[in-house]
Image (cartoon, rainbow, N blue to C red; front, side, top):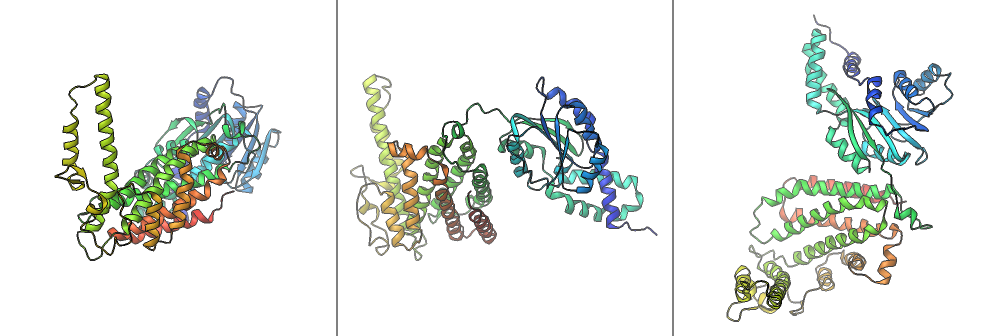
Length: 517
């Protein structure tokens, strides 16, 4: 009869497998020295390790004059190390959680973390902490399990089975145990590269790699000039954590949009609802751009000029979504009234295209650049491509009254019939009439972000001011994004919509409950 191993025995077996494949500290340090800058002599080193005296010895041997600060979350381990190295006066011991390294900023030239990072779930947060702890050109060296999890366990469990044939009947249980105990902490190697960059590290490289483990090295770049600290002396800037907070929520919202937008793309949009999907896609693209820019605020607040213009574009898209939504006719399958309003908004675009074509033709004639350019042919092609916008006999663009000739009279009864560009204020007034409670918020945010589209003395002063002025507008924008996503998901009846809506709501609630410093 085969004796079933207990869960504790299984845990010990699997730990043996992991420990057998741990990177050898002495080997790693030999390789590491070749990657360090010449004459690299750190004054202070932060060492985050498990109970491994060999790692401490390697650090002491390579940097004998450095102050070494050892961190562990287990007082017993610290006591053991303290006993082993009691003769060393340059070692300091700290009882701290691994993911809460509350030392002074810019206080270490090197941070080393071996083995323990596999227990840290919020690795990006830890990377950001380490970045703040390091001085310019400081080095971060760490090891972690980085390969694809299923291949790891399939391979290692097979090795374990070969060593211990009596546990073959319990292979499934062992896999389940391994999966449940470790999956949350493992990340692929490319994930580490991406998130080290997000934490602002540079010169990221792999020092060592084996089946389970990778050892990575990265450097905190030297910032020659930080506009926020060097040029805005005396200004109270918003903390880095709040910028990270904004980035993280943007990234989560973006991931949700990326997830369900392909489902919209493949749906039949024959009732002119395609416009809502396209506007939401535009919001998603703008969010992608924002996430590429937002961390630049840490060193230069002036990037908010570009960031806020992109936010303005998002607000403009939300205004258009709500404005067009107010023309949905529940009794009309074809949604003619909605189509007519889309045409009216598109007419302004066509007006601009015609102006560009005429200007290009005039420029070519003035400079004799291109005699093949035929203005009449170009205008005819525009009329052909957008035939629903033109009065064919006259060749002129239809006015609003003509474009709305087939609209539901009730839905357009309160509209002012004008052929001028429909501005955002008029759209927001329509949104108010349609019963959307966000009209005041829309107007306020749109006006604020619009200041960054042009230069004036007051805009310049706002640009140079602290970021805390902008954060309430960022938060309100995300309330509107989430509410708009709700509206569109419900309108298009996307499969699994409840899970998307709940996830968006939960993330928004968590974001708003974390107040900026």
